[in-house]
Image (tube, rainbow, N blue to C red; front, side):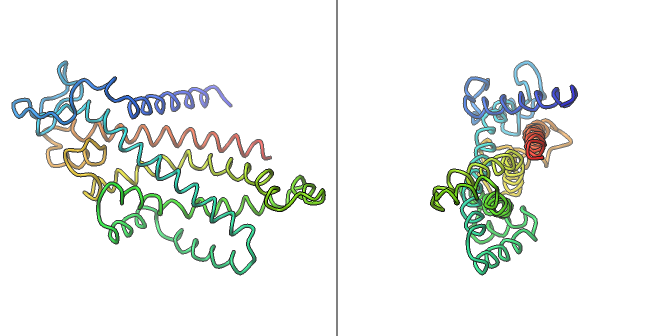
Length: 270
């Protein structure tokens, strides 16, 4: 890895650690109550008293961005974790099942993959209705097809590897052989993809919240904060800009780490 790549990687890791700390311990970093209003202090620009300024209700934007990390990142992590589990189960089943089951599962999966993830999430929200729980479920269902495809490919590839064939020749039953020799490799590939997928899930959840399909005011959530400041963008740009920066940094950092992990994984495979 070249020096520039190492610097980029460590910067991305530092950003993710800071976001994770803010999500886990927002009270340590926040300077104000994110829900406290002050009409007389509305729309104050960034300054000493309010690092990122205040919104239309006088709430501290910096504190709302800090507290919003927990909700935005939490939805992304939860959706990605469930998508990995479901993708592993269905993909592994398709990889070891008879041809008829495999073809049926993958044709359905191909139909879902033909549509953009955000469009699938919108359809799910249209069926289930808005709300934070439904947003997490919608993002999960939209992301699952990618993990199913990768799990199925890895299961079939590792299933015919030499060490797996050797285990079968030695009389190891099929289930223990799968759990011991195939499952760890599949999980490794899925975990690398999930690192990139977390950023995509956060972006999708924020987009749904921006459209008013997620949490309701006055919940501190990055997408909702973006939507709240769009009507006064010319007068108070900081209301939308700072949560937008938080979303961008988180997604870019997760993508950088995920892509470099994937590059290292592919290098080891070769």
